[in-house]
Length: 150
Image (tube, rainbow, N blue to C red):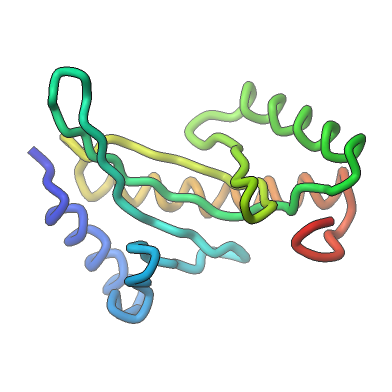
C-alpha cells in the first residue's frame, strides 16, 4: 500500500534528481510543491476524500496553467470548444479551468494506492510535456495572451 509519506518520499527523490531542495519548492500556505518543467510551472499536491463506504482515498494531482480564459464571450466559447476536442483526443492529461484565477490548466491525477515511483514521475513528466504542447496550441489558435485575463 502506497501511503502519503511514501509519495512525499517520491517528491523528495524527484527533487534530489533534479537538483532542487524540496523545502524550497514546497509552499506551506497551499500545501503544494512547485516544479519547473520546460516552460511550465507544475503544482503537485495530495488530496483525499472519504467514500460513502467510509474509505479514505488519496490522490496525487499535478496541474499547470496553460492559457488565460478570455473575457470576450465568443473567444471564451471557442477556447472551451478546442479544450473539449483536446480532452477527447489526448490521453493521460485533461484540460480544466479554475474560474477563480482565470486560467485553463493541464491536469493529471492518480490515486496513490499502488503507485510506484516510476508512475509518479510519468504523471509529473506528462503534465509538463502536455502543458508546453497545449500552451503552444492555444497561443497559435488564439494569440499570445495579453495578460492573465485575455
